[in-house]
Amino acid sequence: MTGPAPLDLTADVLALTRALVDAPSVSGSEGPLADAVEVALRGLGGLEVERIGDSVLARTNLDRDTRIVLAGHLDTVPIAGNLPSRLETVDGEQRLYGCGTSDMKAGDAVMLRLAARFGVPGAQPARDVTFVFYDNEEVEAVRNGLGRVARERRGWLYGDLAILMEPTDGAVEGGCQGTLRVVLTVPGKRAHSARSWLGVNAVHGAAGILATLAAYPAREVEIDGLTYREGLNAVGIEGGVAGNVVPDECRVTVNFRFAPDRDEDQALAHVREVFADALAAGAALELTDSSGGALPGLSEPAAAAFVAAVGQPPRAKLGWTDVARFAAFGIPAVNYGPGDPNQAHQAAEHVVVDRLQPAEDALVAYLTENDGETGSNA
Image (cartoon, rainbow, N blue to C red; front, side, top):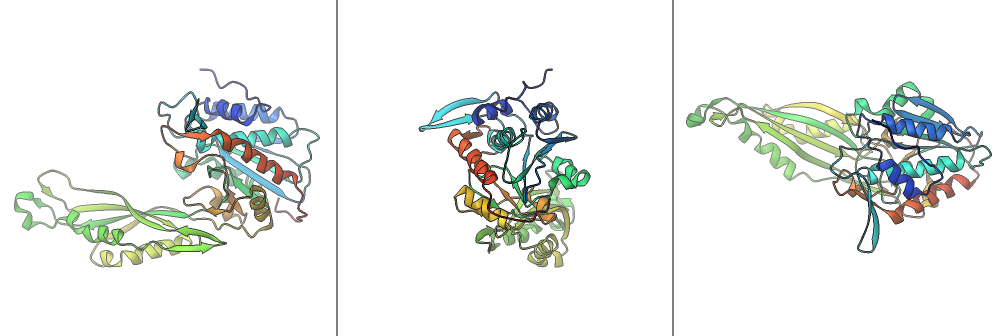
């Protein structure tokens, strides 16, 4: 099986987006696309390039006062009959359809266009730039390529600001929510359903947990002028072993999306507090997954300058993204990309063509305008 065609970084951002989309790269199979990205970046001649597994790193080394890290994942969710890409006009709007168009190969294309502009000998951006194209973002965190880079080449991630090219529909989305999952296990006593009074139905016993969730008042908190709304939801329930047996165990999986002013320990303590009655009645709580959020950091000079370059009011990121990895290193990070987050993972996923060039233009303006900042974490 042959890999994708060589990438032409001189092509416009729409053509480059199509080329990336038409190179299938479902999580775990990004290798051929990573190869093409690596070859294209090395061919520019003005970048230091390194390969870590199926992640490709590149950076300028011009001794600028500030360094900006641009990061985007190369993988997509499984293909849903939505390749190759196609252009259509709907309600007067030109759209590019295909797996990964929005999440997030349009953002990757913008990054490659910036590399082509600033990664050639003689280019003079006002800021040094690091490009991180990584693998396995759409699957479990242990496989995440950015996490591997953080473990093996952490210095490549340092900068004054990190911009994750996640789909934001062209707006700056600051920080991200934290997320955790717990499993609440309600005990019961097994019995024949014809003599149910001899048992204790664990599924019925979960009613209090579900009632608590249905009545949960979601907290809203404002941070750096951005409003984060929390959510506590049952995302799964299971119990019972047969159609004629009273269940002796019921397990309710609960997901808590928490504002970034809480850390993971505080978030878990809150969940325990919410379900205090159920725990006192004999339910058990097990933490199965947890990732901290990220504060927006928009008051940092580099972040404020980027918001000004985009020219739109920023908003909170309602979801978890890899900005949290940068925040853990003390690096301000934001989400910004031309894709629409509402299109992510859909069979009819698409990106609006008119969103592509403005995203490139805003980043070009930001990387070429010297605002007099001094000092660098790079």
